[in-house]
Length: 130
Image 1 (cartoon, rainbow, N blue to C red):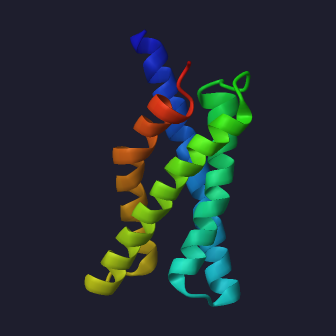
Image 2 (tube, one colour; image 1 turned 135 degrees about the horizontal axis):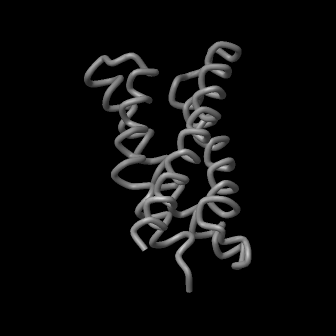
């Protein structure tokens, strides 16, 4: 049981890192190309990373593809909105009140949200076995 839990946790961390790479790639790419407002650019990155993360979580991390996709997607959307709000609020606070560079803020905030929020709600709510 512990080995399976650690294996799932490790896979989840890898999936999160991969989705984060997509998120950051889109954020940096869109920030450079569009010269957009950093919160909007970060939100676009979060959307792209979220889509990748859901697919990896469903098919590889939690191997939950035999369960209803729509129900999982709806639960994931609720969790993802929480993730988006936590990341956006954290970035705003760090950049606006603490004058931290937006990319540094994104790294710190994403790490905290990932460690303190995402894995637990993914495993206990989104992809939990019935």
